[in-house]
Length: 116
Image (cartoon, rainbow, N blue to C red; front, top):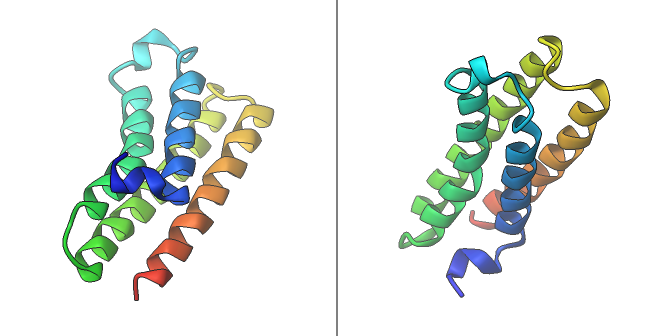
């Protein structure tokens, strides 16, 4: 098992990425290289940066990657808001994924604080 796989924050972020991929499967095909790609990239960036940071030496370096993951979560929040306003995501689906995104953010924030 890789070190990052032991992190609850990584597990939650991985589940969020899976959720986002499933959500975006039904989006318009003309958005494949537009918002769909951007939303998926932001979602995958979160667990990817946690995995990369966990492989670094020292808390300071790990915190830098955690900070990037938090930024990607913020980007994801806006993109999902945009997708909802464009009609690609129902209000119910948006609320469901936003709960998971928020929970992921809180877990990552606690990890960031623990690295101080």
